[in-house]
Image (cartoon, rainbow, N blue to C red; front, side, top):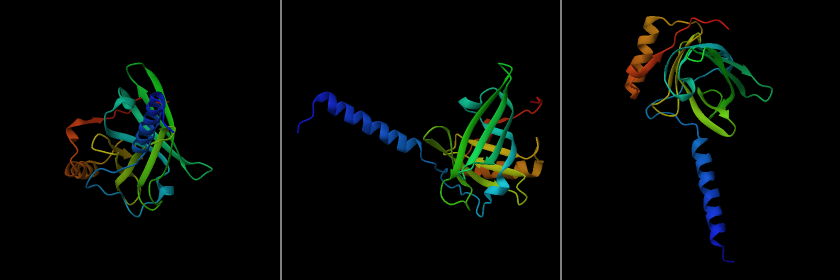
Length: 183
């Protein structure tokens, strides 16, 4: 059976969309980085405060950024990100979900805020008490320094920045998150 030109175009379009969905829903890790292992997902749950980030569209103009992680009934992790948009002078919130990218004992998660599209969330450093974390995204455009408190000790900050720099991150581009609002 010979396809009409519009049917061929439609099939090509569907194929392109399928490839894009597959490509964009992959959770990867930057070259040279390795996720924390062993990783205890249950100890990671709770509230984390953003200390610094590589700025990107969804966090532009945000201060007072925090993320609360809790367990969903299906075993996935609820991700509740909040931040204060100091330009618009209002709170912004985004709810998503995370699940292990490989096995639950490795700090590699895939996170989705937009339906079937997942991005890498890779815990590449964490202290033994799960108080401070360095998280990498899919590539060198995404990096977060997190703390259970609204500050981080200088020694931990220095060690994490050194690790990020060794992976190729331009740490001079980090935005240092201010914490002054209360919600």
